[in-house]
Amino acid sequence: MTVKITFPQGFLWGAATASYQIEGAWNEDGKGESIWDRFSHTPGKISDGSTGDVACDHYHRWKQDLDLMAELGLQAYRFSIAWSRVVPKGRGNVNEAGLDFYDRLVDGLLTRGIAPFVTLYHWDLPQALQDEEGWPVRSTAEAFVDYANVVSARLGDRVKHWITHNEPWVAAFLGHGMGIHAPGVQDFQQAVAAAHHLLLSHGWAAPVIRANSQNADVGITLNLTDVVPASPSPMDYRAAREMDGFLNRWFLDPIFGRRYPADAIEWFEQVHGVQVNVMQEGDMDVIAAPIDFLGVNYYTRTVARDSSPDNLPRTIITDDAEFTEMGWEVAPRSLFHLLNRLHFDYQPANIFITENGAAFPDKVCKEGHVHDDRRLAYLKEHFKAAHDAIQCGAPLRGYFVWSLMDNFEWSFGYTKRFGVVYVDYETQQRIVKESGKWYSQVIAQNGFED
Ligand code: IFM
Image (tube, rainbow, N blue to C red; front, top):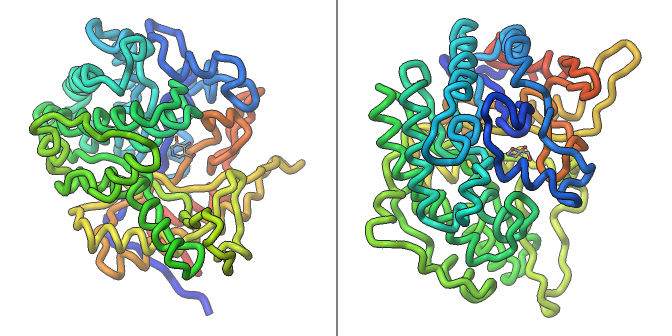
């Protein structure tokens, strides 16, 4: 028996990308160097030795990409601004040519009836600011506010959805703790300082954006996960609580006015030898600035297991799981649990899923199609989970698939394809995958048959 799943009227369907992952044109028209330019140009940092120098060449092909979005029927498009395209040295001189690019993009979207969702920071810090120590220092947060002011003053009459930061956890901890993202630092003390300044800059920028963009909604996007213990062992439960503190609550709690969680402060001290002492008076109130929506990037759940020898092996719950090309477990029910948890524990007024999707090894068949059945199934199951959460009262207002098109997947280079549109990097040809065609129907019907 088939069931029709229909989303609430006005539910917004979109797709997301990020500047460094698609734009290319890394040094054109006055753009300054970013930490991702520097990082990808450093041998050994990117698994396939590639860079974002050309990526999807979106900087030159933006018009045809907008036409493609219109063909798919997208109602919203989430993209990020390359800070160093607009302010090449991070602070000071504004590069008008860079602003013009985003100006044209916004107008092109609006002409096609697509709502722009702008992310101000998706990890490509101007290298000049990194040379002054980057996010671990407070002055970078101040520079971010000036940059947010410049962009929102220019685009604020037309852009009505603003996201200050994308996944500050990743920028802070993969970039400064584990060093697998730019700027490649391995120091948890710096990572915690970076996380704090990212949050502080969010809190400072939010009112500035609102002042420049009347009736705009301002939010922040976090990468969140549903943490579950690997077994009924009390030690695994404790490990799950710790992981939840590190991955979720470290950002959620301060944004929702609860300050940094005490158990996670203790965990940072004990496990990483980090003193959480970077805060100044009043910072936590700044970070708790009201937001209009919470952006949620969800890909997988996290199974927590205590690794100490006296934690006897028990049934590990991932035994028969399916994994994506990233090695991430396909766990759609966890999206349901996460949305409910956010709704009941934190009560955001509005939630957008600002990213969800999967990498699978796609091939173009000889007829020129991409039969990405697993991605289609992944999306369908996650849409169902989101729909169920809405039935339970979660204030979910829209859904952005990651990604519009295949792109530069950070330290994995071009080896992971997340798009609902295939990109042939040799020719820059775009091919709508079967998942993209299906998604287009979902948008048209505001739902699907299951
Ligand atoms: O490609 C990234 C994106 O930049 C941020 N969120 C996760 C995606 C997949 O790894």
